[in-house]
Image (cartoon, rainbow, N blue to C red; front, top):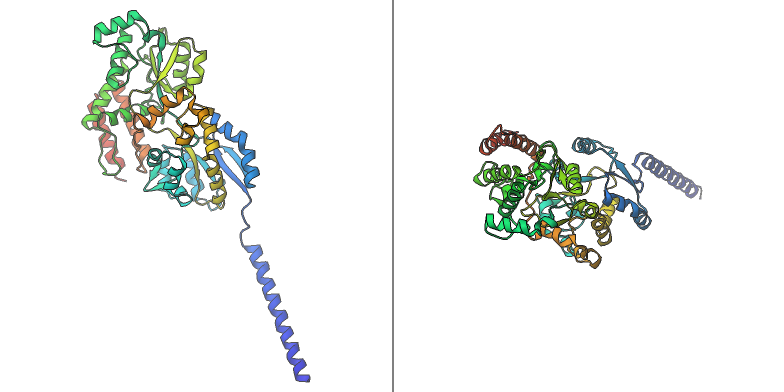
Amino acid sequence: MRNVKAVSKIVWVVIAVIIVVIAAIGVYWYTTMPPAPEKVIKIAWTEGPEFDFIQSKIDEFENQTGIHVEFLKIPREHIIERLMLEMLSPTPSIDGTVIYVLEAPTLAATGGLVNLYDYKPKEDWIAEGFYEEQLNILEFDGKLYFLPTLWNGALLLYYREDLFANETLKEAFNATYGYELKVPENPDELLDVAEFFHNQGYIGIHLQLTTAEMGAGAYCLFPPLAYYFGGGIYNDTTGEILCNSTGSVQALEYLLELAQYAQPTYLEDGTFEAELAIMEGKSGDRELAMADQWSYMYPMLDSANKDWNISVRPFPQGPDMLGIAILSNSPKKDYVWEFVKWTSSYEIVKGTTLACPKASCRADVAEDPEVKKNYWVDIILDSYGRKWPITPIIKNPHAVEIYEAMMRRLHEAFVGDKTAKEALDALYEDITAILQY
């Protein structure tokens, strides 16, 4: 009996030791393991009607998911450098970010962004209503890092209705060019009409050909025209440099000729100057006949001094897309995905589309009766993929360097330091050097 009691005492001691050890392990695990991430995400944000709309609806998202969103206004001038630092940090200060299509090639190459196809396959996005062509534009080696849910802007042709309806001008145009004066539908017609109005004492077309601003100016004109004329800048698939091909040279020569009929300040003017010129109906002391300008301006035409209308841009354009990307080193990736999913939903895309005229990224939204009734919807869609294709971007990690070199060489051609061929031959050498490293 004494032996049984002794054994029992030993068993209880062992059990007590085991309990103490387990408790100690539990305390150690609790104090050393990282805590579960709070349901708070930080998104690098920017400004505009679409962003205001999302912020006005954010309470709905937070109530549905329990995830709180903090919007951080980070200057975009050096956003690539800032995001690079965030991607290298073991404790990033942001979890997701607004990303622009020009920034995507460099950031995609780092591996620091989450592939959205890991959350939802491509075929599911398409089945949901997203345009396949737009997804293709944004794919990098079969991966998708953001959707163009926040901005999907198109350049349109703005034209003076009163001038195109003027019988005297119509007769003069027909006598000179042998066909009826009408809103241009292709580059050749655009050149004729711009020349005609220039010779009639107007500014034929307001152009933004600044080479100092990436994502605007000459960047929005030369690459699409090069594509239209059968050239290009650089082919990622084949590795072929196309910038000085016959089609690209022809495109730059065309642009130089068109610029003769533009406002004298076409190299300095940006989006704001174009907006002001349309509202006043003139640039300097001469009235405008046409302008190449962004879709966002359409609602302002009611307050313009002249009788303006919009039409399909008479040649292709590149993508101008903003969306939300997820940083792969964020511990809250799944929470950011919920935010991405919400901002890409039917109701939110409908809201951002109506907040400011742009191309919808979803076909079902474009067909929504409340959206479709707007005059600008079909004009924008025809300009942005339906009639004219969206021209591809350079997806090489050195894309920004290549485009910066392109802008420098275009400037040399615009100011007369080089011919179109000389400028593009020099760009060929620039791109060759850039791609060596």
